[in-house]
Image (cartoon, rainbow, N blue to C red):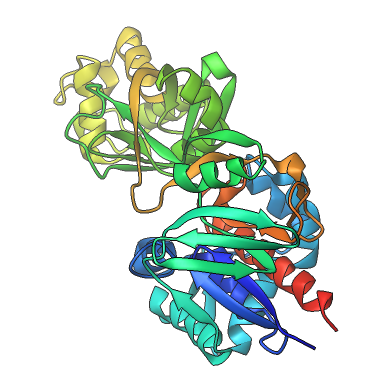
Length: 404
């Protein structure tokens, strides 16, 4: 039986994982990557450690981490989920570990381990990898495709489109007849100029609550003060779930921040109990809540309370002001800061046009799509990679079964 030709457009997580699972006895495979190097996002993920996946092994639970694509991914994760990813890498000699927050990393703490494993698998199969090959056009001719690139033309029986979400790659697939949902940033920090945060970069809060009244959205979790404003899981989760609505608001909106993550009344009770037990302490040296001394002093300054003041002489009005700044701090967001290195977007190919049983296009014959080119994205924690691995694996299995 004559081998068929597969062109994989995109040398990232989805493209490489698909190639690594294809049958070299049935296919000639060429990976086309426009950059000088492959697997660049894998390299920088998790601060260079590579957050391979997340230890969530129930597909119904796993899909809850995807603001877009959760319904569609259910059948995908029933075929290949986080446990299968772990198994795949471990079978190839990669030891993985699950950290306290359930993120999965290689024991080596180096993304190089993950990259080498996939590159070696592709090399072992003698598949071709072409870097600096920018795809200019894809033409369908009868049963096959011609892919025109900056370095020459390639013919293919099957195309696997795993380019990521760049505007150019979305335009190419749009020209072939696919509908595109306009891409907007997802996973970003909130830019805030506010006296509460000024010069307190690096201060963190383990149990914050954040809400956007205009969007009736709230989220809780760890939060961090940055150069620009606020970040951390609580902020990033909101930015992912409300990516489109926040883009419509042009990133100008009010948020309510509860730095303590407990109700106003509960905070008041904690304060009064502490005051009763420590009447002689000064307010500035009182460690009442789980916040840093620097931040506590900032709250007292904002509330116009002298640090030397005895806690027993704090007035009711002063207490209300302190608690207001801690539990119901209204701030104006005036923009966003995205992680250039780990940029994630909401948007991409319309999901109705994809057959999620095998990740094939319903518009184009013998054309498969995987990864961030689709209108699927997740919160941080290894979920975006997991979608890539699962989709790519399914494509490879489907193609492997096509030929006897």
